[in-house]
Length: 262
Image (tube, rainbow, N blue to C red; front, side, top):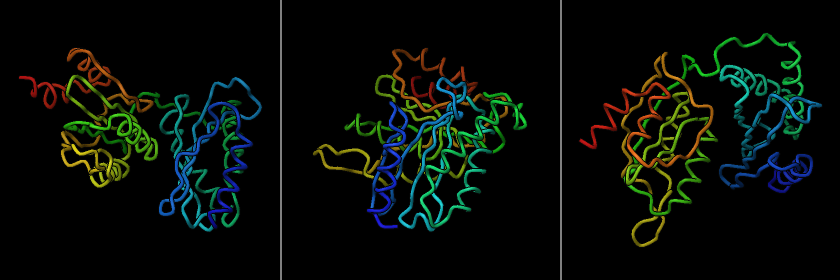
């Protein structure tokens, strides 16, 4: 699909999903294609109890290949989000060679309506539990010279890779806590280490050379998951500790964070 035709579809989507917060164009790149985000809900409900955010990456070969899809929602369990993503990808295969994003959103609305009406088998897994594929990673950054840009980049990467967690500031301490599928965390780390995400002392763009991976492992059953990726600033070490303990990650705080202050 030519860039012109792809942007034609994007323009149409922006016109269709024109309410506040419904549509966002995240990226246009000759290499990585087009990335956009659409928030939707059960069809026919203006104030639904289930909202879903769909992030679509349209590769340069789209629509001869399906888009990459990320599904996120505070109203669905992780398992429900993954099931919805799987079904969307399967449906996208049937729409190859034609613009399909609007059709995929309509399908999502109907699926949410079916779930709302009890037509789908309900997912009984607790919303805050981690599944067997969830990994946790804790990263430490030495500094951020271009903080605003750096933070926006980290938030975008977390969204692109369907990762939840926290970007945490406490004094000079900068931590990134990530939860998600192992391969997605690996891809995030590659970007973090190879992209020019900050600036040096001269103001020139530079790669992150002083990142430390403090922890990376399969999440333990007792851990709780974050529903979103958020940026938090903490006024004290106790506040930071409470964040870890709330997610049942107190041992990571004690072993890897607190030791830096002793």
